[in-house]
Each structure stands twice: as C-alpha cells, then as structure tokens.
Image 1 (cartoon, one colour):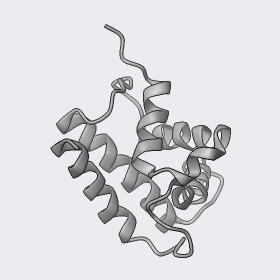
Image 2 (cartoon, rainbow, N blue to C red; image 1 turned 30 degrees about the vertical axis):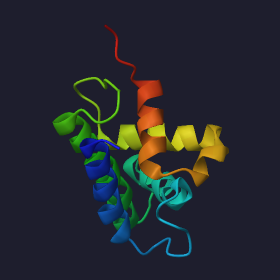
Image 3 (cartoon, one colour; image 1 turned 120 degrees about the horizontal axis):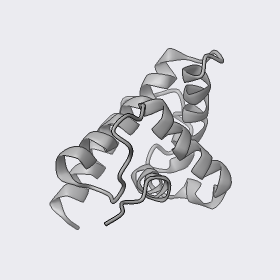
Amino acid sequence: MSFHRTALIALAAILAGGASAQAAVNPNKSAYFHPVCQKAVKSANGLGGDPVESANCFGFVQGVRDAHDRFGVGKFCPPKVVSIGQLAQVWVSHMDAEPKVLILPPVETLLDALGAAFPCHG
C-alpha cells in the first residue's frame, strides 16, 4: 500500500473516530457516513439538519479533498469552484444509487464517486 493511501486512510480513521452520532455503525464502513451526509447535504441546501453531523460529514470530505490536492490521492478533477457540500452530494448520490458500496471503506467510496463525477481528461 502506498504511503499516500496509508496516510489518507489514517486521516479518515482520525476524522471518523471523533464522531459519535452513528456509534452503532462501524465508522470504517460507508454506511456510517451515509445517513450523516444525507442530513448534512439537506442542511447545506437550507433544509434543516444538525450542524455537528454536518461538520462530521463535511470534515471527512474536506480531509479527502485536501489529501487529493496535496498528495494526488485518487483520480478526480473537480472544477475549480466546487463546494464541499456539492462533493458530499455526489457521494450521497453514489451511495443511494449503489447500496452495495455501504460495506466498503468510506475513503474508497468517496474517491470512486468523485472519480465518476469528475473524471480527469488528458
């Protein structure tokens, strides 16, 4: 496993470990973040929501984006102006469309979702 992927997984574990809202679900599975991020996306769209849960979701997404920007982890090329809320919406839509991915690590499903939504050309 490459250093960058190991660092990203460690970062994800740290971020996931700080959350307790979904304690009954393993934070090493995407199922942990699915309901949290669904609520966070609603909150970002002005439809209510819990700011703590929103911070948990958006913090995780931001951490993965930062690792991508700094270390080149994952193959996705988002537009220059894209919000963390928009990236979270892409992830939630991916998990909604492919429920089988809920058993996979959240870093993996987030990178897959972003890679499909924002492919790199050239």
